Length: 458
Image (cartoon, one colour):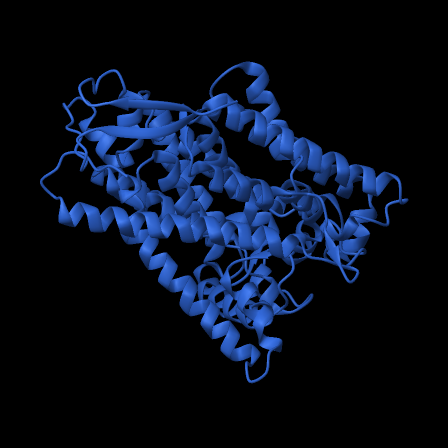
């Protein structure tokens, strides 16, 4: 599958796909009817392009092979090898679902006395969704682990995971273009990834947030006004569940859809604050939630580096070096995270392709929170699909392909009886994020220096 060379200096319409790849998402959305002018020092446009199918086949094949080795390692070792992908505490499986059942069982989650207050950090909408399921078992007087052992308790979890997986898979399938078999294989590859397997084991409600965010990305530009409006509500709900998806409101801001931005803010405020009225104390719980979030940050910020995303886990790796304290490492990680977030807000609109803008926002979503669990990688699925949708890939896109595969890799590589695959996944996401930041800064710099040109080229 060799790359093809495309050169032209007189037929811009013939190479419209090349022109698209050189425009920022916002520019192409609003100027696609214009006549564009190509300018280079040699007065010609030359690039190396790869077929879309090449990247699809490589991605699907790589993930399937890695998942095969992962499953083989489990099966031929009686489950002893490769299980490092799962949570380290073997008695804590599914507890991101069952612990909140205990917290919400008395409709007073932010002051529940089971475990520390720093564990009760879900926004109220999440607890409101889980509340009906807490009535399937006596979580008030019994432990969450007992609910996990109960027939109805485990069936409620299976029901939620099954429905969530079907809906998420259907949305990703709809987001993917091309032949049906490729669309199904792409979704299957994503569901065989280490991120998805880990997410199932934790049973975290983040999968609902990922579903809602994917719905937004699928329909926010729809010609159907109803779907477009529902997509705004979906993004508001996603942010109400996990806060940081609110970053994707920037897409509407970049496109100058100010009316939609205002509606999104209204939907978001309603989704965040209205559910408080369902709990004991109502809006008096707002300061309790903030208190618990601060406690959570203190409890988890410096807690290891395995299967966490962000700069803080990487900076903690260096805390063992001489004269470098954990506190300094954590503060350094926070500083880098904030710096990257600022660059994202300023520069993501200047990236050349739609998938790059969305991928950069997703990297910020995954890397910025102080405690970003491995299941946050679910947010990466949609931008990966959009990446694979690109009709023509440049040579530089192999960088993104390789590190996307490493980020999703389920196969566990161990050194000194300790898996390093989680660290590799985090580094892969951060390298993608770093390159996108450099591309965004370069695009802004070029835009300033050549602000009279209609076309930005790379």
